[in-house]
Length: 413
Image (tube, rainbow, N blue to C red; front, top):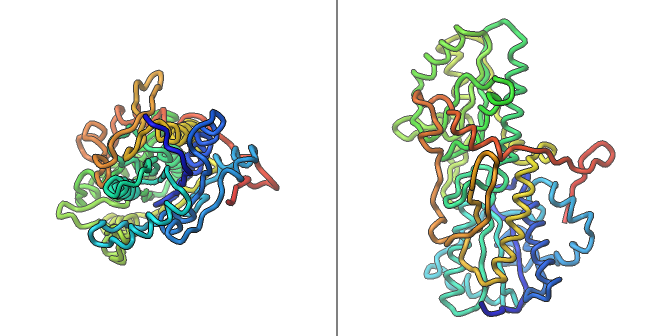
């Protein structure tokens, strides 16, 4: 390893989470540690709104911000992306060489030699393309991907920062919905729609109440298995025969066997720059089906963005790991790593133990880690104990923000 002297830049991209700022704080802490030990990194810039903001040279000095230790602590428990986010898809170099030439000019102008991007699958695509470009053009720079996503669908890592807190929120909220629904004797069905386009990891967490109080949704449906409306109606009828208040948890991305989204009729068809269709209406579609084919009282609840921004209900494990992986990214880059994504390797469930490593981002980008068959029951409408054993350590522990005037303190950069 040879020392590479220069400045660093960090950005956040994609959908925010309740822990993405903890990872940002971790990167800052890592750079501070490097500086304290006389390392090679100088200034640390924050790019506002990800790669889009970098192209516009909207940078802030994070070293100046980090002088206030209390603010850095508060940043760890501030939800959403403090630097702002974007959904910018980088073109291929051959398709838009001018874009990359402008980007390289900015790197040179600010002497950027370290690039950290905190994001999910699409952000790792950016890291992959950028690391390939700087290697191709001979500009020495270390490019690192730092994972985040409540979807938990990144390949190569046991889990992702942000998932544990979102899972804790979903598990808690669904258990509260179950308690609320149980107060009446009138037959009723409550359908809870949970985020998850291609992978149902977050929806599996709805079943965690089984371990805490013995109660969980009657039915759970994930995108990993084709959805059958007839099976859903029959299973719902059977559940209503057992007790009057049925709760169903569904991923927003469940599809019929032909690949059509269950909620397609309620969706706009609009897609983002990565080609992902905006999803909504799955719960409502099932609500209408229950109303028309069963005829009982029915409601649908869409948890929506609360799943990813509930900073008042985070997992202590998730926050600690998010800080740790951000710090590790800074140290790994300073030691010579580049073109890598940081990751967690699980050592054991009980006691829970893990270690942090990294892997080639080119082997990770644009791939989806789905819920394995062993985590889904034989009927494809429930979650196994093996899955819950995987989930439980990730939601354990509580971290509470400082309250000011009765509301959580939040840091705005």
